[in-house]
Image (cartoon, rainbow over all chains, first blue to last red; front, side, top):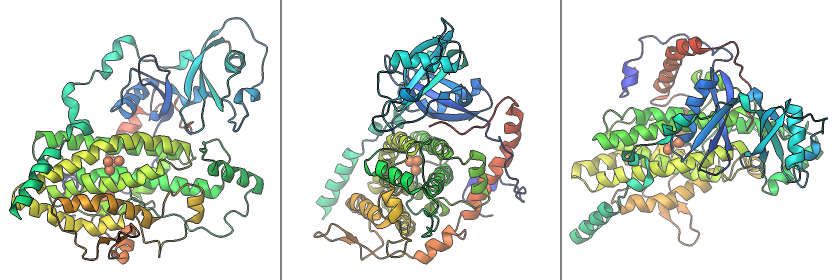
Amino acid sequence: MKSLDPRVQRLPEELPPLQPKAPLDQFGSFEVFVQPKEGKPFQHEGIVHAPSLELAFVLAKEAFTRRFTCTSLYVTDTRNVMVSPTTEGNQNAYDLIPSVTEHQGGEPFEVYHLMKRGKQHLHAGTVEANSHEEAFSKAKAAFGSKQVFNVWVVRRSDIRFTRPEEQDLWLTLPEKKFRDASDYKGGDKLKEFLERQSSKS
Amino acid sequence: MYGGGNTFEGIKTDSLAQEDPQKLAAFEARIARGEKIEPTDWMPQLYRKQLIRMIEQHAHSEIIGALPEGTWITRAPGFKRKMALMAKVQDEVGHAQLLYSAAETLGKSREEMINDLISGRSKYSNVFNYPTFTWADCCFISWLVDAGAIVNQLANAKGSYGPYCRALDRICAEESFHLKYGHHCVIYLASGTPHQREMFQEALNRWWTPMMHFFGPSDKISAHTEILMRWKVKMGTNDEMRNQFLDMYVPKIWELGFTIPDPALKKDPATGKWAYTEPDWEEFKRVINGDGPCNKERLAVRRVAEERGRWVREALKSPKMNYVTPLA
Ligand SMILES: [Fe+2]
Ligand SMILES: [Fe+2]
Ligand SMILES: [Fe+2]
């Protein structure tokens, strides 16, 4: 194959046989939550595929906070997120969540709300519970007066948080300006060029 | 980046016959109200199918689109241009990641999408099947192909499917750097030596037809897309998107003193519409069906990359992990 692409020059003479990807080739799914600014609630940003929670954290940092401001990030296995039904119009998702007999104490669960269809889920608060069902029920008591379209709960111990000593992940070098639109001011060069053109004619 | 020239599946008139008419009416009413559809909502099969197809083609275009520009990283003129181009190519691959995730929420796994790309079953934007002979070709892509992609992406970000719109909002934010960088590169060529000007003029001559193809076949010959527009899968016709691009960028190209290789190109001040010579749509069909100058090498590079990475993915695989459909 003749090509300008150095990668093509490095291709083997004969291409390997076409093997379909095995199932799970792209690993497990993890949900990513980002805090865009200090004091702002964490919001759901999307997903990554990774072979472990730890690597999911690393990949999420690259995929979701490479170019945007971020103060903290966390990830959890998609299977650990318990999801309520989604509603519309005036129906509150909390109205579809059954209340269960609640017990004292338990461990912390994080609660997320979909406040507007089309937007991201936002962190709403924390409840202490002994199971996901109980966490839903307690979240309903604590936050159920608000109209929301969907609720998620996640056991805190299932989340990989950013550790305090990892905060420097987002200290980017000032010389990375070349990735900002503001670093490309072609205006002067263009003006000078246009003036040269018009003086010629 | 991405062209509107995506191929949708032929819509048969009985496509909606099996759908529950009440659910369908509620679904359409929600879209008409301007509300987004979320992954767990009821949706007609046809909507799901066409969206998967479109988002998947968009993701593939980002991955394949990184190849013609990536070729130039080592040869970009100067350290600063190399760093910027590397950052841009990294962004494009990141866009693919975001888009694959959005498509996955509709139920097609990432493995299946990548299988369909490397086996040639799915399409990607036609424009990336052309070669980048010189640095000026690379600048053409960074400025004008990205500009075309932005026209499409800004429109699609107002579409009806929540996860796709959210991915596009992030993508559009990153594209502003690509566009500025690309324009900057072309201004430097335009105001440089006669040889530099000539290089860009030649690139423009080579890329004009693929650029016109980028927005897809003319409305006169493209399959009817009424239902896709009503469902806000498609946000404008191919000709509308092409016209928007011409309106925004032809004056900027002319401003730099370059000649666009189409003597018929001009704007009708009364209608605001651009007149142009229809590009060769037979060539478009030929290239999209696999017979373009670079189709084979683009897929070969992807396929070998998959093969060479296989051992890494296998070494990392854990029996405790499980692929599941992402939430949103
Ligand atoms: Fe892109
Ligand atoms: Fe692009
Ligand atoms: Fe781009």
